[in-house]
Image 1 (cartoon, rainbow, N blue to C red):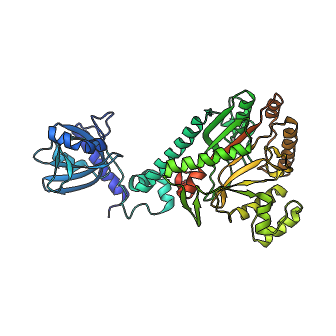
Image 2: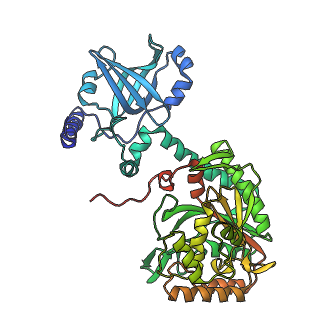
Image 3: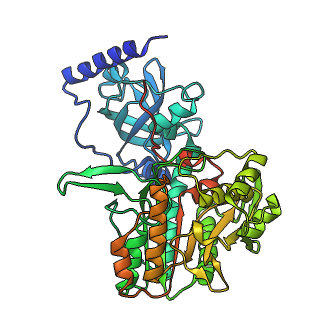
Length: 485
């Protein structure tokens, strides 16, 4: 078998041969009249009219039989057969000399049906649209390694219809989210990606330097939470944003550092109204994207049409660990983590991080669908306190297949309490907790002008990955990978 360099050398010679004959191997435009799918759809009328057609695509296979050459073309819609012959095709010999599987070509001719019933274009003339210099991998022996598939995603999509279908479904997913919210009266907005102070989540940000302003800035860790709440102050009652956010944290089957998130903010609504809206949103998106409300997600059989449960934070932890977090000390929580063999990082360690670790163990037991409620104030710095229990917040998180797939709450709009909570978060950062929130002084100032009662909610593309039962990295078109060494 020839090496890659030998193949490239041979193809470069073919490229030069095309140039010698005056054929541009990379022309600026084409004469293509229709897609191959359109040619297939209108085949009968085009065949009977004996009208010349010009179509094109990538050569996916080629079978030469003496003075005949059968080629399968693919333009991203369907495959279609072309027949080139020495008697009827201009520059037939040049085609045999210079073409390879993987090349993009344009063909002009008449449609007909072969004796085997194959719809085909009989080629009068052809030209090269893009000469390939590397060979396509063999279908069953090519990109089998997951890392290589993700690295050369263009080939993965070309040869794997399931991957292509998945990525197209993701487009439908986000369109369904957008359409639903717009129908509910929300206005789509855009907020800055570069921020002086990150806000809206407990996460470690990416940091960079803004040369023009000579400032250290951060890539946002939420889809404009603090900005959108300032729009509530400004009098916009319903806003949402779908955009990229960035978190400088670990990689797992569920987590990435660069991904798409949606957040909405709804003035004059509380977290109870938020839960009702989110349940309808998730059902709508699932139906529109996958055509079902029943999903196999890992070991969980999830039915979104069932009654959505309520999972109390403290009660759930008590049920699965026998730990009473209302009275448990940090040492007692650590003892329980050790007993359950749950690993944790002591860098920036505090009670809030310990509670989060014990909760993550418990949530894996929950199939859902349902909502986590009763979350302690110490792990919810932006949520209002529950008037029935000031130690917990009016916060909710959709629970599906053992994970939180979204986060919402009645937003804290008391500027004095918000300032105090930010100060507490700042103390945690000083103590080494890199995920604790920064003090957003300008946001507190905005709250002092008055913000109406507001429900906010955010969800990311992780929901799509869960419903598709795929690691989130495999549902991104081009996930970040380390360069080859």
